[in-house]
Length: 321
Image (cartoon, rainbow, N blue to C red; front, side, top):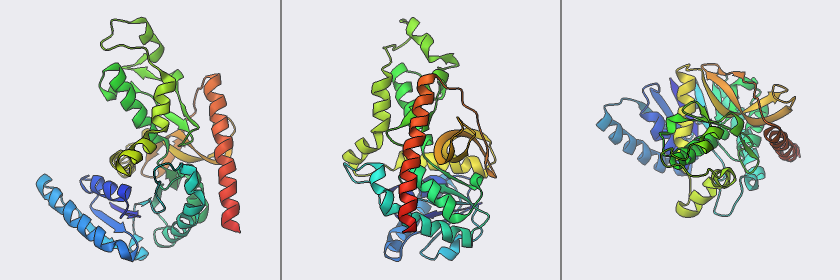
């Protein structure tokens, strides 16, 4: 299988390249950047080759600035764009990144018309919409990283709070990848037991009252916090990207939360890309799953849709000027 990464010289692109290179499902990896960043990519590929030798993994890595090399890609990761700096919100990047994403989406359609596009560039819900429209692809073939990363972060915080293995946390975050993300607490469980039940078990190992508001605040600010400390987020997004791509390439049909184009499947919401649970396989999105929400969650999800749709309309108008 062939995977291409546009914007591979950035922090997330390089980390994602390493994650994908060590996966047996990928045998050809194309790293694409602007001409001035090719030395960085060449060094990165050599470093990855050394690491893979220690793991006895064989993969072909190509570095290029020529978008024609997208040809025959099974999946294209679109991570090109201006990255967030300390103090910036994802939405601050909208106008800067929209033209970049639209340009590359058109090139993907030209050179890799049968590929699946995974959008990583922020603000990811809006950029997923931009990539979908610019590429002209069917909606199942274009989706964004979005709430998959948020859901993983949420699971991580919960696992550490309750002192259990992260695989025992079953939860997800939907809506916007940003301040209007919505945790589905009404369907969250630990080891198959609804979260609300745990308040009755003070003897549960490591039990402390779970502060949902504080925890969601940490998830919302996780990216900004990491950027403030080390200058960029890398490993979390990279492994989340790899997780999604391997699910597609291996036709695993896992239920993951990605930014997908809605046409009334949930709460009648139309013409916007939002984080929702989908079944992912070799053809991309094989179905958007219905969600049972509490009244509070439903209102928050509808609010997220309104916010993202307004931002999307602003960006689309900007592109058409």
